Image 1 (cartoon, rainbow, N blue to C red):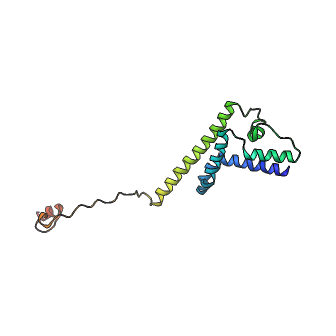
Image 2: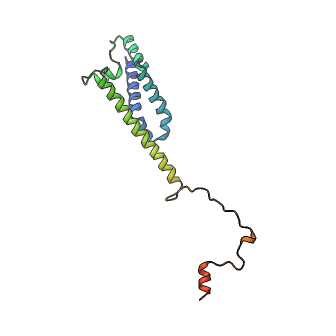
Image 3: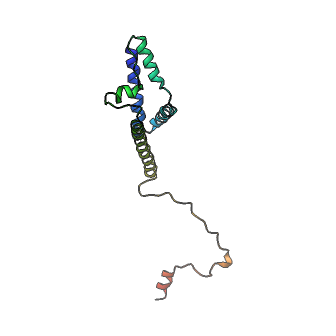
Length: 160
């Protein structure tokens, strides 16, 4: 039974990581390398309507230990049944997907914003990336005005 409980804790950790991993990745950006595959795998299992492998493992371990199996999947048994909600109801399913989508969208949005702000600050304060300078071709000697080079301001002062 201890193994079944261990799998249940691992399952709860995976669900929480799927929900909040993108928000944690704002502080630890490398975590995205783990979060994105986990979130996509959980999403694929849910959208396919397949049984979660962790739920199947937990139920098999419970039966092997002599404990009764439960109905309704992991979230249905541990989260929604105590609240009196049916996990198969359309509203509950919509709520689950909405919460997951919003948390991940906010997390990844903040992550992109943070990464772009970090890149901007790496260039230095107040400095923007400049476009390469366009060089004008040198004028041939015949096109240059003859005489000493003076600015218009210098010429005006010399006339006084």
